[in-house]
Length: 258
Length: 144
Image 1 (cartoon, rainbow over the protein chains, first blue to last red):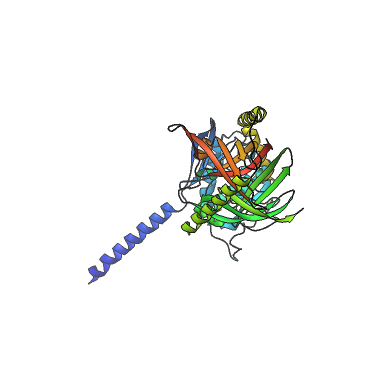
Image 2: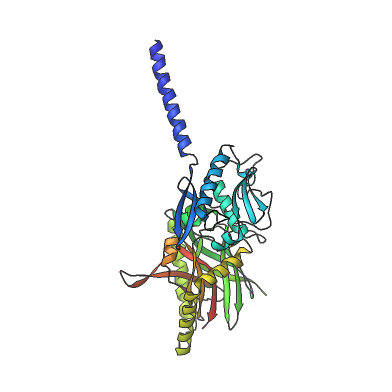
């Protein structure tokens, strides 16, 4: 009788151990790798197979690859403290901005680094922070925030950050590509227009898009400048761009003439 | 849902064709050809700088496209002709392949349909093809 009870118990414990091991293995394996982009060295920090931070510039004595190794080590140490999404913060530091988990600095974002990425420092910092939060599947600390909003940044809130994205743009999964029609609001020198725009991109990103903002300047006999910004919120004051999504077609009607 | 999207797209393209037919015709003379060629050459030459300028300008509003972007020549055809630079966004592999964007636009009353077609040349077939997974983020163009 005792043997009958013991055998299933041992099997159950073994299964549980296997499940725990599998879960530990699959959850947030943080690594780094060296690569090359345009002939320049790049250090990439990965969560699973997703690149969350790609370092293009050296900092002090450290090459991009060495920086990636340091960042990966710091992230591994930080994960032991069971961080929440809110604990991933951006703070102003000497030489730029830093992404922190709790009180521990993870990575420094400098102006040369942002320049190498062809963007602004704040945008890159927000992008990497969102990548980390998404890839590490960090839980929200109660009380919960509005689901579509960015996690509150306790420091350096000077500029709005780009929309959260599950991976860096180079790793966007286009295999699940989708397209849909969304409203477009166009603000031009002649007036305001409203209509529909066809957008396309990764399914998850396309889902987030609520509309497209078009900013257009027409110079009658010279030319014109315009930009399409797929946004995750219908807000006039903040353009919450959804990365990886682009515009293929538009059609609009004049709403108001200036 | 997909059938509905396809139907909307077909209706849209039909309207665009109608608008193109109804718009005034214009033709390229030698001066215009030089203008188109010259601007296309300049865009190819200074694409990286223009790309950084556009990203920087949009970045001021947190609206920059981050990651795989590239600036290529754009030719807009419709009521008027324009040539200039377009920033395309998409996967790095597909963005690298894009050589130009063709925009077809029309007008029916106050309705303005437009289609943006990022294209590349398939070396095997030697014919231009629409680049999949790539779209347009921003455009700077001059009237022909």
